[in-house]
Image (cartoon, rainbow, N blue to C red; front, side):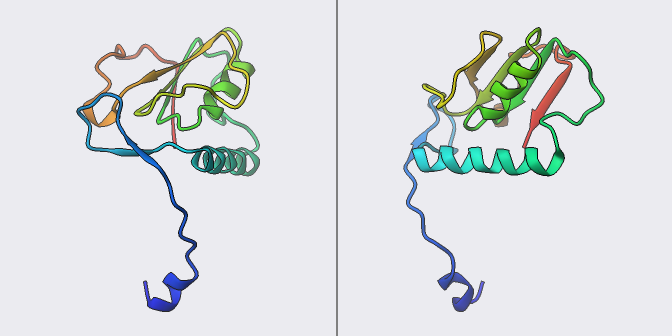
Amino acid sequence: MSEKQTDSVEQVPLSYSRSQLGRSTIAAPHSAEQTKRLDELHYMFRCYLGANIIAPIHEPLAVLDVGTGSGRWAIEAATEYPTAEVIGLDIVAITSPNFPTPKNCRFVVGDLTKGLYEFADASYDLVHSR
């Protein structure tokens, strides 16, 4: 980027925390501003696509959201499919989402770069990632 281009880039301070797994080198943003940004990005995608799920799938029983971020997509998918178990996976724990979490939705801490060994092969009807 040229100096002129970088002058127009807003510098937003973010607080970072190391993975709660302790062995990852990935720094994950963990702030109210970052959660708001992730939610706004989610709304943008949903508006553009017209839905949370555009895959030709009906009534999934198991859904995995890899890199769940704020957890908003997972919560909305769990609301849309109340008979599905929806799991949101992220390197940082989601301790208190800014919105109600359905009973069929839960969040787990995990590092995708270390593999998804804790999830059995072919055990999910839909795997989502952005």
